[in-house]
Amino acid sequence: MAMKRAPARMALAIAIAGLALTMSVLVSGLLTASQKISNTGSVMAVGVGVYSNSACTNNVTSINWSSLEPGATANTTVYIKNRGNTRIMLNMTTSNWSTGVNGKITLSWNCEGHLLDAGSVVQAVFTLSVSSTISGVTSFSFDITITGTEHA
Image (cartoon, rainbow, N blue to C red; front, side, top):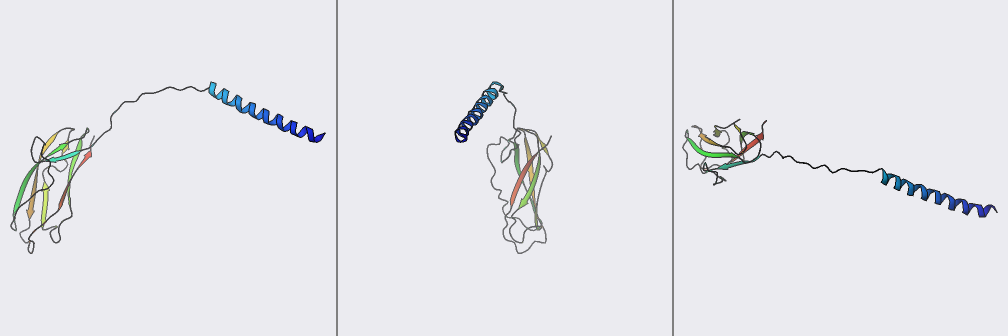
C-alpha cells in the first residue's frame, strides 16, 4: 500500500507546483503596468574645419611653404570653422617633424586658446620661422593638428 501512496503524493506535489507557477504568472501579469516615455534632446558635437577661403569651401589638406632661407619667416592664412554645435577652444600642435628640423624650424599661430562659437569662422595666421643657425637641411616636412575642445 505504501507504494501506491508515493505516486499519488508525487502527482499531488507536481500539481500543486504547477498551480503555484500558473498563479504566479497570472498574478505577475495582473500586477504589471508600463508607460512609454518619449525623449528629445541634442548631442553636443565638436567639429573643426580648416579652409583656404573665408567661405569655407576649399578644405586645406597641405601647406606648401616654398623655399625659405635661414632666419626667414613666412605666413600663411587659413580659416577655421567650428562645424559642431557647441562652443570650442582652439589649440594647435605639430608632430612628425622630418629628421634634424624640430627646434630649428618652428610654427606658431594667432588663434591659440581662441573661443569659437558653433558655426563661426575665424581667420588664422600660421607663422613659420627658420632659425638663422640652421644648416644641412634642404627640405622639411611636419604635420599640423588643429583641435577644438568643447568650452562651456
